[in-house]
Amino acid sequence: MIQAQYNASALKTIEDVQLFLKGEGLYSGPIDGAFGPGTKEGMLNLANRAESAYAGGQYSLAEEGFFQFLAASDPIGWGRDESLMLLIQNSLAAAINAQGRHAEAEEIYASVLNAKERLLGRDDPDTLSSLNNLAAAIAAQSRYGEAEVLFRRALAAYENVYGSERPETLVALTNLGNCLDDQGRYREAERYHLRAVQTADRIFGSDDPRTLTYLNNLASTVNGLGRSDLAEKYYRQVLEGQESRLGQDHPYAIAALDNLAVAIAHQGRLLEAAALFRRALDARGRALGADHPETLRSLNNLANSLMEQGRYPEAEELFAKALDVKERVLGIGHPETLLTLDNLAHTQVLAGDIPSAISTGERGFSGLSEFFIREEGLVISNPQANLPFDPRSWLWIAWKYRSQVRQAATRSFEAQGWLTFGSL
Image 1 (cartoon, rainbow, N blue to C red):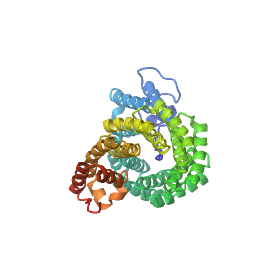
Image 2 (image 1 turned 60 degrees about the vertical axis):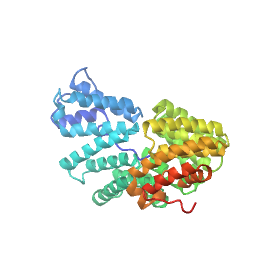
Image 3 (image 1 turned 45 degrees about the horizontal axis):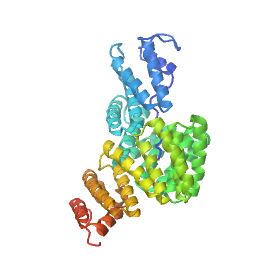
Image 4 (image 1 turned 90 degrees about the vertical axis):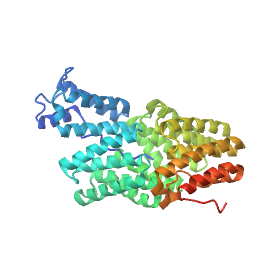
């Protein structure tokens, strides 16, 4: 699911940067676009190019620009201006987060939030924006309980201090909805997403990018509730708006395409869905790279579509490819890795390749042990809701095919105080 977009910084154009610095007493030149290399004006150009790269979905290029700006600020005296540095640090974190490096982004966002609370206070709009960003980076690492607390805190502050129709309030509203979605709490989430769409449509209009983002989130929730025909209608509206505004290869347009394919697949139109999944996979590979989490999600979606068509060798090849990358990048105990392990094992069982399914299952139990150790509090309090897959698929493989796998699973689960196998 696409999370709501967060402003990379308050600096949207060269003129904005110049005006900000002029107000800080750090720039006395003209408000125009004439820059020279190696000058303060050149630095402004660098910041503007980085912002433009971020807006265009070129996150690696944006990261490089923001990092260069920060590195060059001290020699010209700008590094002493904490407000300016926080703006650029926030932008750097946004670019890093958009590339899937959520732990790095979390560290920067936390530092920015602490500084803003000290400088501006807890209820300042800039502080609350940083709180939202930090929560989003935490949620992207599947720490949903922590993220939900922060999202609720931000939403309450926006509503109490600034009102329900402020744009930032809508961001907080939909972020909380997304966090509930990620926990499978779709009915709760639907209420927040519907409110965000209705408010945005009234304030901004139905074709505004913000309204489309909120509509996309609502569509995902509706799809999670099993109303895939309605989700398809919403996704088509989002896709048309994003492609006309941003082009077919922009990450937001690709995400809308992938989401539309999911809704179509849920209605059993597998060939149509597979064609859209391939389009999304190719586009994400070009725009984001083969190892990006969104590219891997498209790969997983295509493999699932092939599996449901009975094309098991093709599906197994794609699941194995996704698994290799996820295990290397995310680790064996990450929910996304475990989900792909589950998909691969299930495909191997359907294909009749039981030895391979057993081998995959053994790898999965190793990952489960890591997952339970990391998420112990969440899992024990509500295990079914916090697992990244249906645990019965693993238990079924263990029980049906290999006693030693069953024993390994028993040790893994019972060590966490979560489950016994007495009912099997």
